[in-house]
Image 1 (cartoon, rainbow, N blue to C red):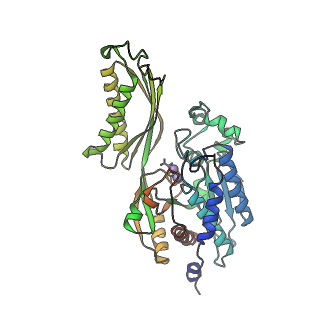
Image 2: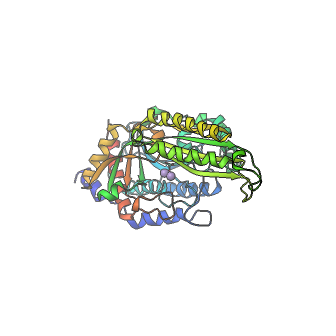
Image 3: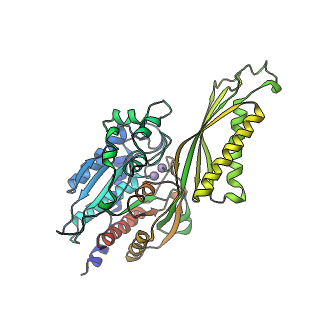
Length: 423
Ligand code: HGY
Ligand code: MN
Ligand code: MN
């Protein structure tokens, strides 16, 4: 029996995957959905669960300065290539998020490692399984922090600049949970050590479900530019201040929100997404005109130039709104990541792996950002998507069917063997 035949008999187990997903989902703040924010004790506990499992599978495990947990499964053959093949995703979540975003990719890696460790099929290379830290921008605004750090894109000064809504710096949050931001530079990944990387992730959209296709192969990943905007007006009495004498910060902010929606929906912006997900009004009293409003903006696009011109258009529209209302506006860029086109050299292996298992697949772009986007700056990277029920994500009822996830793991495992066999 050829190794390919053997591989196709090694199948991921949906029940084992569900049990692992449940175990991680239990590590959460109380309340709806899963809340396990970046650089918190809960995130570290999830990394400990991952590390423990990978050690029992015979991996050599360590946690780097950024908080990424890295598990190496040794090769079974001597004198193979020194470069590693890898897979992984993230273990943090948004607030009241789902139990699949990121976690599905880590659990898929755990299952692939389990099956590979059991399998008689030889491995020429070390296989590296990664749980990235702090992928969600939900706490500090910037996304993909752990993977950006190993790619040298987020460095020590950035960890002091990036702060959460309580004013806690990423540096302090990392130190608080025992990580070492001062050592980030020493833990950046060396491209020469890598052969290729694959991330499995839930689609977070409805393309696969609508098409009735079990496997997505990602050809491009959206970029994102994230803004913090402060509008300063004059707080004063809602009864005694006539309309023509007001400098209402919320009126300006409302015009900004609507300007973003209008720009993203115009015909020149097909593929642009602009969202204001958080807006704070102060003093926030029924009988006081808002004197200050702060809000954050998430600009996404698959086209790099258009992403940047959209930000310029937004800034111009914001200035016009402030001028019209007599308020002052400050726009700060807190994070900026370019879109990426993923290389055919990995995509082709993913397609062949899906075909090997007789699974239907389709190419699609990712509206969400992912660690794969950053890792691709170090080594050729691919992404496998599995369907999201109703296309929902970042919400408690985010769901992916365990059998769909098992199909994704089968494709992941077959792809890792194919990449392992590369010269
Ligand atoms: O925001 C995103 O696109 C991802 O979930 N970090
Ligand atoms: Mn994710
Ligand atoms: Mn996410």
